[in-house]
Image (cartoon, rainbow, N blue to C red; front, side, top):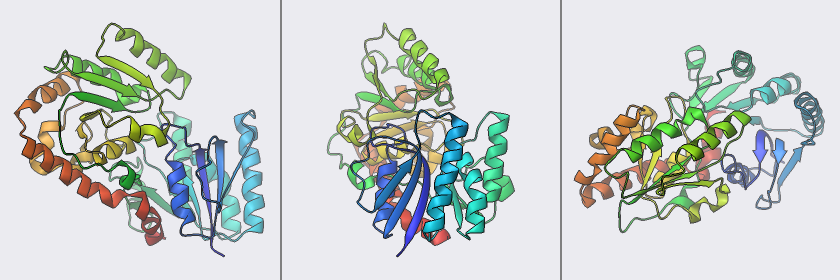
Length: 353
């Protein structure tokens, strides 16, 4: 019987940022007899396949107590089950606490990490240790692993793309009105949402078009930032903050939009961008990792330098695009993104093991 162990932060279909985990786990469930999951937190997971078994610890516990209990869970499961490998998604601490057990039981440790990296010094140390302890590191784009200079060899670090629900998000675009803009993102200062809203408002579309922001804060610092944004733009009727929407419901909310704005720095490689482009939205972006998703001759039309002024100029100039060019961009993006479907995620992971 083939089994796999997966360690993740959250298993909850209602989580806007991490709800995609459900589709990932179901993808593994199609290839393995049993998928055992240990999560920091559990929410709604009714859509999981029957052979996915989820374990967690009491959410009321403190962080250290949680980690101790997760260590015990890993020890218990690896003692009574033989796993092909253990995949840890985005949690350095889970990699570190599982490492001695996995080494003793000769289970390969695969660490998925896609982010520009933490700012906190201690978290940087944790990430570096987790990277050293892992047998393999997986990341989504060429710049989405911060320590690639230490692990930039084909046997350790592997760029395999994201895993999006391409078939569900795909939409054949028959008409394109170009009116509504959207930002789908965790609400955080690092996402430079304030700069994006400002750039939109100061463009030629700022008074005649609408911009909606979908997403919510995770930390107390993010909460403060969110409140400042809502207060700052409260008087603008064409700016809407829609809050968090369960990931599984996003598909029902995005068909009214034509353009998506993403203002993250190099190192981020947001799944929301790929999902929106799969749905036929065109993305304004500041991160060069998204270059490959647009025809080369159109990259400069939609890539800006992160400042409100640069974004404003790019938005103001889209009137010059013909419908044939719009269709060419959308078709090109969708053909590229099909390769990053969750349907072939497991094959991509197994290929590097």
